[in-house]
Image (tube, rainbow, N blue to C red):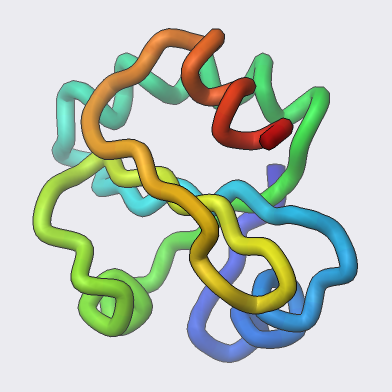
Amino acid sequence: MKAVNSDNFAEVVLNSDKPVLVDFWAEWCGPCKALGPILEEVSQEVAGKVEARDLATKYGIRGIPTMMMFKNGEVSSTLVGNQPKAEILKLALS
């Protein structure tokens, strides 16, 4: 996994030639912490992690954890809430 911020979001996510799974989360969020180990496992197969409040606002994140799949610089799909690994892999590999 790679931490991304507002300064390098376009370079790492929007301009990527590969799909990028972005996880919007917060340190104080219990479901986010529970999802962490699953995302660590998924990160072995896909890459991309973002932590930046202004990006959460830009993409209309209203609940966390929220995972967005970006392809060709656009959001292609979204999952909200703590999800099983199979669902995250389905999102990441679709």
